Image (cartoon, rainbow, N blue to C red; front, top):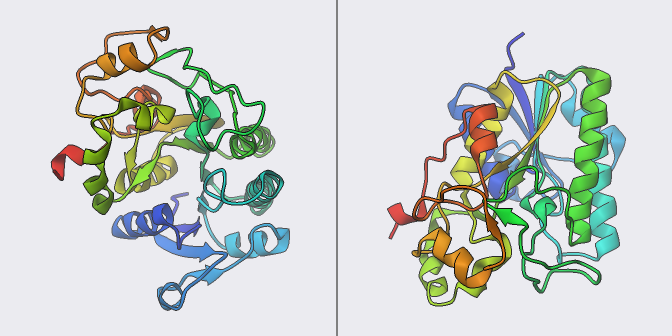
Length: 290
């Protein structure tokens, strides 16, 4: 059966709004939902639902074919570590389990680049006991996992495990997106301020992703011919810096092994896995806006 009706959670957020637009432009009937809904969001059909409540999670998925699950506390440092972990894991379990109970055909959801060891080299969001070390190798790929340095990252590692188990029980294909730092076009105005100091953005190997490419990945997660539970890095094809990526590594992380040839400004968060699994190819770069 073809997937036509899709619930998008976190639909009032940056990635959620873009995903709703992308899916509707490609003919999907989208049911958007979020926990905080403004008047404008409500006018655009966004339903209010608290996904930490299993009953509400079930009701927003009822009658849909698939879910693009983007609702979570989006980063460490927003709330206390315990609240972040408990809320994210509860939301993710509820959505995953409800999808299985209702017999949905596909789950695409937001994991995080932080599962790979970020912030590299330490950082203000790192929690006590976090390693804060250099990456083991570069480009960092899906095998550079699990290395959570924050409770937020731990919530995503835990959720990837839950997804794998529920996918196994149900037979539903799950795709988790280890999403890089999301940017909108207006954010590209800030990129010039980072160029003089490579340490400012070392924490995620100078990675980013245009919000429209997040939306593209969400759609591909519904359409790709896949089975089981899969987790892939999605990032832009380049870095935020106007210096060759290999030079950045040599200066900031000289002990990090370089696994293969790195071409000019190529991303150091490898997107080969997403290319192979989903046919993902980023459409946007900050260099097109400056």
